[in-house]
Length: 445
Image (cartoon, rainbow, N blue to C red; front, top):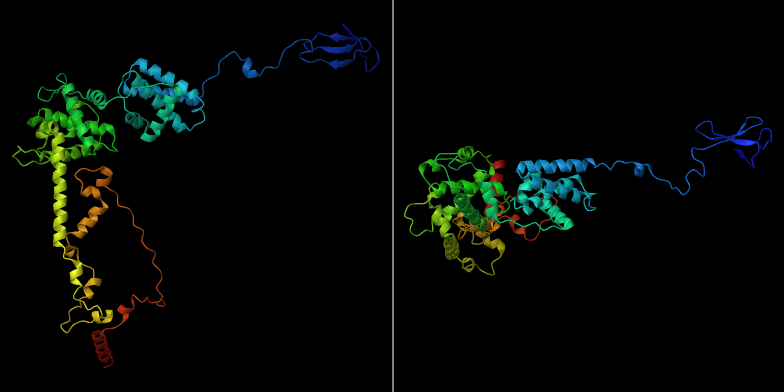
């Protein structure tokens, strides 16, 4: 097909045709065979009304998920397998994770926060399907701070618009006690215990521990293990159970021992011992070793025993403070015999027998046993009020000593000015003058 309006630049002929022999169309001069112009892959009229389309939009396949989303899904599956939840909870956790991960609030966050998101999705799914799991358990699995995980959980629940229910302590301890293989099907009859009775006694011990500050700031699993161990011993306090240590009990129940559980057991026994001393009908001397058989009576009357113990402690502190005030002599009477017109230098002069003047003992530090009413002890207790309280938070009872900043030591040159308040200490007394003169005479002689 000839093209009108075009001329060959070589011979000037207007006989120009389209050469469509090859895939790329060219305009060629018929007379001389010169190529007038090379065509394009598409000409103007090939796609009428078409628009430019990017390559990513022309692909038939869907967009692949990113690696962090894939890792988060694997993390959700791993946590569900560790908690041994059913398939429904696992699928629901993955669904929540995919929805929350795509939200704008969790797209451009740190990788650590995305790890928390996986655990929070598992927690919400477990609570929606009545599977008792605490946020402390999720924090232990993530090796994360409880506050940070809680913040991500609250944000995720608000974004997904879900309302997961909360669980009470009974459901959590009941689910935890079922992991202990101490039923009649697994152990001997004298060591076997029903899970319902064990859970009821453990809940009472945990409530008592919460009232006496033992649970504050502690991991939940060691506290529950300590409560279950003491419950198992106190339900049937025979010689077989009382001889079992925590290590043997964990081996018997086929559970992994938590190291802090031994400290929680000692703290619970301390509380039980303090309350057991207030039992009026108890005749034997109560110690930490024989307090376990009295656990049933202590828990049954724990509120009245708590009031009696706190009242007795307050009365003891009041009597101690009154005795300290009576034992301390009034300091005003000690200085009443001093002459008000006597100068500080004359007060420091020793008497003929070599005794100190009445004003000298004011400047001398007193021994610890001379402090009135145990002032040294009261000063130490004042810095740590947990030593006076019958029950106090662990951070107060075992308070860390703060490092005291030492004052900077300045170089002493001897040219420093002497203040008026220190000038009396540099003036020699008549006795010091005589002794100094005798020493000079002995050295010169």
